[in-house]
Image 1 (cartoon, one colour):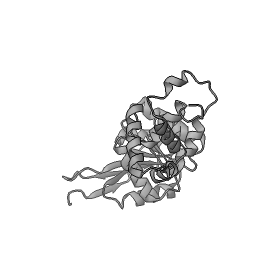
Image 2 (tube, one colour):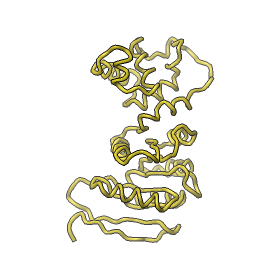
Image 3 (cartoon, one colour):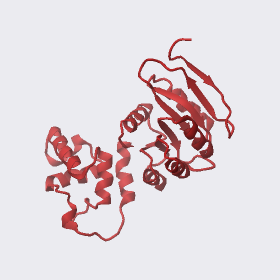
Image 4 (cartoon, one colour):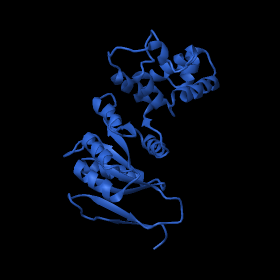
Length: 247
């Protein structure tokens, strides 16, 4: 058998229909080990076939329900779990809570039909490292996996605005003047544009700036508020109420 050649076996754990892949170690860079957790077998099989086209990914198992997902995550210790939020038995939030309680090192990427629904926000609140639509193209899924493996959060760009809308609440503001975190008026304009879902070129056009200047401002904003990417900035801005007209 050649180094790195994969052997796929159906090892029956409790519950049934749990599939586990075992791979021989190779001298090359280790692939990202992925666990698929989704109710429908056709969906799981489709994800497995898609991911196995990329040599940097290795599907180590798939689970048909929440109970199996927790068992396999505990047993296999995958790098990433692709978790259908509508999975049966224990739903996606229950699985996230179990993963957190067990302090498993797996990074969970939540799969949902609509990132505007409450379950997407709850997934982030309960420890998911990202949320991606079921209808997203394969290339976007690959990018999301790579981002969460790099320690970042992932939300598909077109979904940022709908997610942050869900975070807005009518709670009273406190200490408005001290809540700007040293941001300049221009930087606040850029923050508001990011929350609204504008890309860097769109922000540049909107504010009559160059794209490079927008990137420069964003770098300063990230440093000032202590975030690492646009998604974290959008969530931070809404939570700290930086996007209201009277700021």
